[in-house]
Image (spheres, helix red, strand yellow):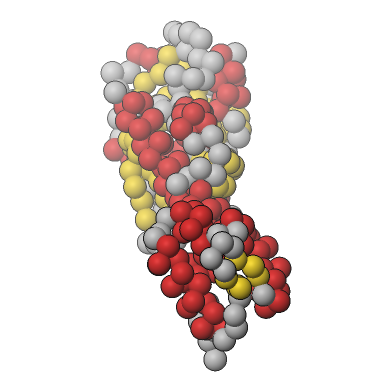
Length: 301
């Protein structure tokens, strides 16, 4: 049989014990003295025990009252602490969130988002996992990250997508390179030159291969690299031209390098918040996403 446990009656009992008075206990609980007395009487009725001996001047615990006090003080304090902890989570005064992010998003969108959150939600503890798009989707499906800042590519039927920014891929080249003489540059135009490409698994490489129908690396691919900064350094040394997303170019060490957006519609991508359809995002995640959207809006201006 379920017990008829009433928190308010137990709290009234503890306030009466702490203050030694029904009047002072009622003030602590924020009720009138008759209401406070009714709470104590209700508790005594439920337990079928007398908890206090009362006189006109004072109250004293009975033996049953002493035992009840000793048994419930710590559990009630723990229960209240648990509620306060949940309130902190709901208000994002504390909390942890694991976020997946594309390398380009990690360079441009994530740092200002983290800086802003440190000011608005100092108790929030975000952890950022940087990975390529396909890896991020796998992490979402295996619950390794709560949500990801990823591109809207591939099989995402089981995902929700909230757009952040539109991006395009560009060819990055040194001053004086022949590619710079083109009025517009397509994927096919790149095949005449030595190439520096991001490795398979990246959205840049995926869109490059799909646009050209490639199943093997192009003949003029001399450098198959992981990091965008490495690609920029190789281009600076005159070792080829690179295909990189436009989004992070402003924070990469471009120096005197030039870039041109690729003209093909297949060179476009949309980056956004991705999470599983059946996933309930925590308040901490929603706070991060809200801040990321503000940073994305500022980026597109």
